[in-house]
Image (spheres, helix red, strand yellow):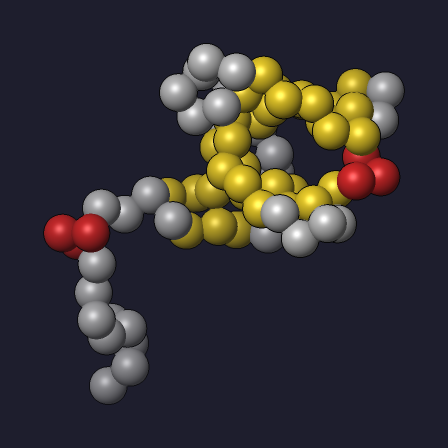
Length: 78
């Protein structure tokens, strides 16, 4: 999973959410309304709500790389 802390949060895209209690999860971003973060489970089955004062960070996921395409070395390391 590739995350970009500088990317804008876009509804219907995946995000990594870390809560102040130490839990982190990957969910579909719905939006923030009235200080409440709305998310959907990745399979679309369940909706989640968190008060923003419970949230440590929300980071946009910009890419998901399957294991078959992982590289052991950084391409610019030589």
